[in-house]
Image (cartoon, rainbow, N blue to C red):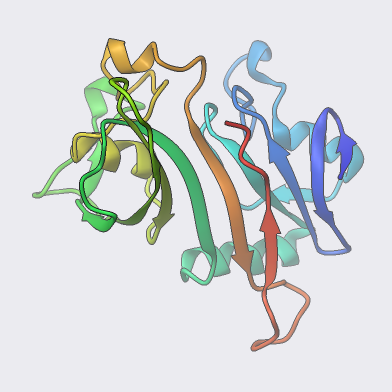
Length: 217
């Protein structure tokens, strides 16, 4: 793994670049000069033709993919939109999840007066689906659960809102966790650990590209 612009390079070829974004870094520039530093600008320092394909929340760490050139970006964006990309996240949530696996099927919409917060809305929300599987439960009184998450849709803050909605907010989540759960971690404990996607230069039916990033917590 090679560092570029302070980021760990996970994969690079003529069509695609993938890096490991740290928690606390923007995926793309925000508003204002103080928010210009981001994963996209650092990657473009080494690969000027790299174009963002998807985003991770600022607090989320893990795999971030760029297409090299407009054609590759378009193919990758279509793959994400058509749900041909398999994503796996790891999170640590408060409480012991009683079942070993399950699905959260709750529609989401922007909580406009409190943006960027999102919320569950059965009347106007967009369909949102998350699969989860318990990896480990902590012993002792400070009950937490390490869980693997598979978002089958790609709504903003989907994993964070879905886990809060079922009573297990993610540790360190400044938007959706109550103060006592927020205080349990110095960062949002959510990491994009694995990504499997069709390579933009390969013909349909070719083996997908698999990317991985070790979970830092």
